[in-house]
Length: 250
Ligand code: NYM
Image (cartoon, rainbow, N blue to C red; front, side, top):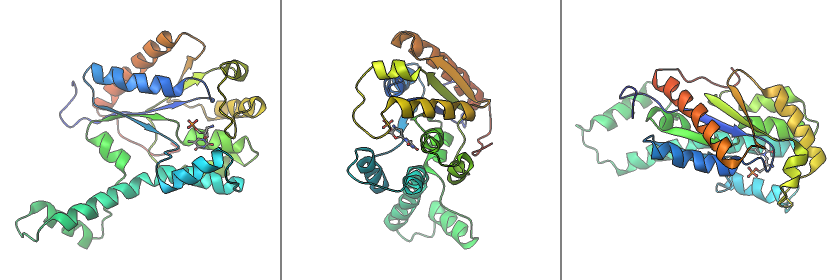
């Protein structure tokens, strides 16, 4: 819908404290974007379905103990591992293709291999370039804000995220930690404690940059939904008009 035929989708990230409403809002946002004719997908980090994600999940539910640096790197690895999926995809397709000399796709792939170019293109980039907007529930900013709340150096926390795609828009759902705690439902996972969340909130402040927009998460669900959709539609249009992709931490 709209834009040039080869226009890309937007990379939109939702961030905030636990219980700020990110998951509800990101789900609604994807439905709303699709309803008005855009291709959109919901991603979330941690992605608990991968083997790294399972280690993270077990740590969060206090079933395992890990050094703070180690779990930080696992959260980051869980974002990086989206690249490998693409490599598998290529290998799987290569295995399927018969050795037909006229197969242009295969010839291209072999050409790329022989010139030493990398085939490993991130799944995220491919999705965006195919025109799909990605709505991502938590990203590198959660990684930095939560780990540095444990006392890890903020620059050290940012380092493993360098080179991941930078979002076109980060929407911070702003809620005072006390209000979030009142919403209840802290599920007993690690980090779901008021004092810790206060530190996380302060760390998020340090990360705010030009691509960030803030929504008052204490407004009604409908109001947040409406504001969010408006911001995202503006961003999607800018991306369709040719805004280039960039990498963290630009
Ligand atoms: N979290 C999430 C981190 O500590 N680092 C990260 O990189 C990410 C993506 O995991 N309390 C924390 C924030 C949350 C917890 O997230 C699980 P969720 O959105 O509740 O599944």
